[in-house]
Length: 115
Length: 341
Image (tube, rainbow over all chains, first blue to last red; front, side, top):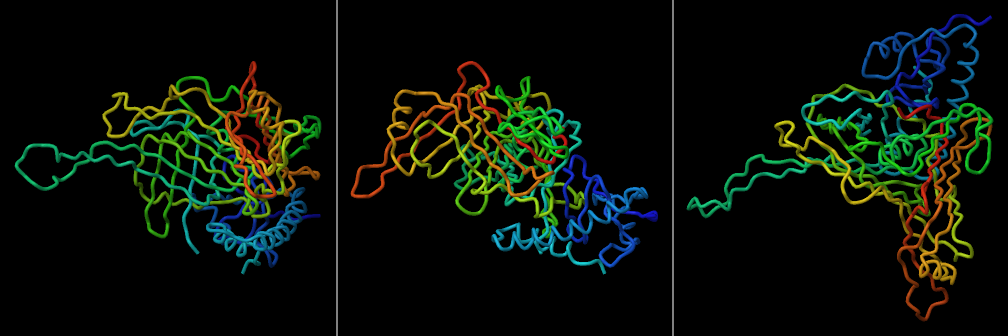
């Protein structure tokens, strides 16, 4: 049985339910299913997540993930990281221009495992 | 890493120096290639005054005419935002496996269909406007433009570099503000923009091979000072008296063809369709899509290339979407965005 978990959810109103990057924050975030935090090598430490939750300028909120959704959330987070890596490689292969270079840098950070 | 961002929200009414419109639920940090918020400074020069002084006199603040310009790739979420800005609110329907796109393909749950159909634009005297916050974070300088209307939108799909759009228009009030302390967020790069390889056209029957295709939307708007408030900035954004919202463009042809030329000379109307089918998938194998359908497209300008000692002669035509009755242009965007409200 899955244990109770917490996760960061994108709180940008009206954002499509697609993976989002927050510059400087490792990982990808959705407005619907939260990205698990606090355990596992690829997850953000809980204290860092709480700090992001407190920062009102950052569109991320710390929420409890219902037990029934934990497995889905973990699966989505892992799949998104892999898709992100592939997307980043594809974008770099196609060539980056101007501001895209900065976005790619952000995403490269997002796909690294949290310290 | 350079730091900076643009944040944009729709306004319930055009924002000016004095009012505080309700802002849209949806807010967006567009992954722009560039944005320029221009103050449009018009200082008062008094060099025409007789003061027995043979030097330029100091200018003083008089009037401001703010405007904006933006360039970005055609990302599925962002292009819907900009289309709403210039065309008005879409009719949004959630995919359910039953509703279909213009190709008669069922749209799955998770995808959303946004339809912009002519006649465009919101009812009333004013166009839709947005509030833009531009952060030059590395320079510690921040600006907010209120009452930004979209007067021009042009979409190109070059051979390389991805489909992109340029948009511009006037605004009502531009101010330098304190650091709003916002953190931008963007869709992941795995959500790709439309590219040349995604575009296909259905054009006039027998048309010559196409070299390129561009689409423009013009929305006549004007910022005016109604004297409703005491301000050096305009206070009202209105639809201008220069006609309706017009969808037009150009289509250079690699090969000159009699069917194109005859359509030009006869002002013949024809149904046409531009279709972008993206590389990223929304759900159940259904990709992001953008359709622009023309009920009565007409050539309104153009000419063959000059006859010369060359193996291939093309032609270039300007086209315009017109209406025999109503519904000249229908834009259908299918993406992951639930609502643009």
